[in-house]
Amino acid sequence: MDSFNKINIDFITLRDNILNISGYLRCKNASQGIYGVCNGQKILPESYDYPTRRDEKIFNFEFRVPVSKKPVKFDIKSCDDVGHPIRFRKFCNMSDLSRYYVKDNKIVFYDGSFNVVDFSYFEMFSHEMVELSKIIKKRPDFYMQAIFFRLIRLILYPFWKNRKIWIVMDRKTMADDNAEHFFKYSIKQNDGIKKYFAIHNSSRDFKRLTKLFKDKILDCDSFKHRFYYMFCDKLISSQGTEYDLNPFLNKNYPLMAGVSNLDFYFLQHGVIKDNMSSWLRKYDRNPKLIVSSTKDEYESLFDEGYNYGDKVIQLLGLPRYDNLDNSGLKKQIVIMPTWRNYITNRQELLNSEYFRRFNSLINNKKLIEYARNNDYEIVFKPHPELTPYLNLFDRNDYVQFDLDKKYQDVFNESSLMITDYSSIFFDFSYLRKPLIYYQYANDYHYDAINGYFQYKTMGFGPVIDNEDDLVNKIISYIDNSCEMEEIYRKRVEDVFEYNDHENSKRCYDWIKNH
Image (cartoon, rainbow, N blue to C red; front, side, top):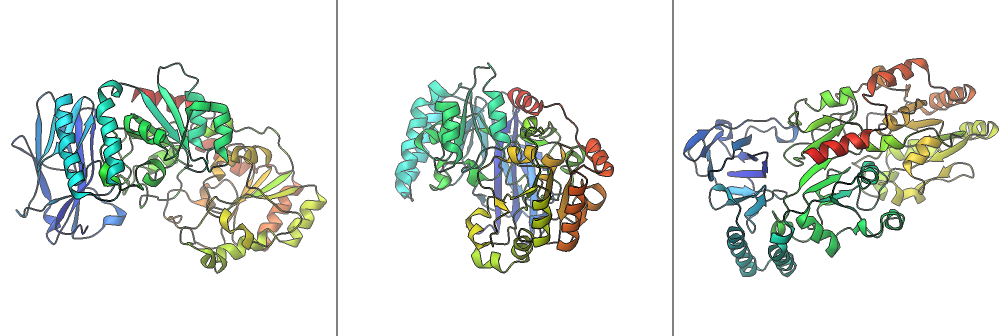
C-alpha cells in the first residue's frame, strides 16, 4: 500500500506503563509535523533522523504516552490540518484486520483513536469477534489458518496468560551462536520459566540439539512453535530480522498481528564495528535489549541513526564468548571472509572481485607450500551465505573446506585468522591470537569507512590490500610461532569490558529482571 499522504505506524508498544507509538508522516507538507491529543491534552512527539528516511516529505515521530489506571484515548493529527489516514506498516503489531493486542493486563486497540483500557476477558472476546468477522468477510490468503490459531489463543488465554515462556533462537537453519550458548546457561537456572529453543528440522544442528534438550526444541514454523509463540512473553535471539523470528510471517502476517505480546531481546550476532543504522534501526527492530560487548561499540549505538535509549543498550558481553579458550590449539590457519549483500546469484558471485580474490588466495602455491613444510593446516570456513556456491571454487589437495565444525571449535583450535570485514575477528582476538585483515577494496555492504572502528588505528592485526603482501605476512607469523604482536595485544586488552566468562549470566540476569 502506498504510504504517501498517510500517517504510517511502525510500532505500538506498551512497556513500563508507557504507550509508545512510532511512525512517520509522508506528504508534501510533512515538515510541518504532527502532534497528539491524549484525553483532550495536546502532546508533542520526539522527532528522529534515520539514514533511510532522509526525505523532506517525511516526518519521523515517536509519542511516549504515560498510562495510569484511567483509560487512554489518543489521536494523532497533522499540523497542516489535513486528516491523513492511519496506515499500519508490515511489522507493526496492528493491521487493518487485527487492531488490538493485550499487554501488562491492559488492552490496546485502535478504533479511529488509539485506546488503552484495563484488561477483561469480555473486552478481549468482544475485540476478537470483531476481528474474526472482518477476516471471514474478506477471506484473504491463509484466512482459515489465521482463524484456527486465533480461536485457540482466545479459548486458552485465561489459562495461559500468566505463564512465563521464553523462546530462544539463532538462525532458523543454524545454531551455535549467542542464543544457543545463552540457552545452555539459562535452562540450568531454577526460575520456573519454560524455555524453548527454536530451529528448523532441516538444520544440521537440529538432531544434535534435540538429543541434548529433547522436548525443549521447537521445530521452526511448526504448530508447536506457533502455539508457544502466541503465549511467549520473551523472544531472545542472536538474529534481528523478523523473517528469522516470526513463525507466522510467511502466512499473511497482518492476519496475526498482535496475537503475541512478547518482548524481543537482541543478543546480537557479533560486535558492531561499522555504522549499521541503515539496518539496525529502531523503527524496524524495536527490541527491549541490545547487547553490546566493548566500550566503543556501546557508545557507537547512541550515534545518530539508531535512536535507541540507554535502557535498551546494555554492555553485557556476548554469551558465546564464555566458551572461548585455547583448548585443542594446533598449527592451523583459518580463512574466514564475510559475505557481500550485493551478490544475489551465482553469476554475480563469479563476476565479483570478492570471489576472484579469495579463490586465488586459497590456491596460492607459495602459501600452500610454506604451510605444508611447516606442518600448518589451512582451513577455509565460508560464510553461511557462501555455502551454496562452494562448487564454484577451485579445489586443491591441501586447503580444507570446513562446513561442519562449530565456529567456537575453529576459533579455539586455530593459531592465525585471515578475514576481511567480518566481526568474528573480535571472537578470535578475544583469545589473544594474531589475525590479518585482507581488505583488497572498500566493497563491504556496511559503512566500514565512517564507522567508529578504524581498522588501521584500532584493529587487532595489520590491514593488507594485496595477495603477495598477505602471503608474506602469513609466513612471518608462521616463523614467529603465531604470536600476537604487542601493539595488537594491548588494543585487545583495552577494548573488552569483560573477560570473566560470565556474559551469559549477565544477559540472563538482565532479561529475567526486565
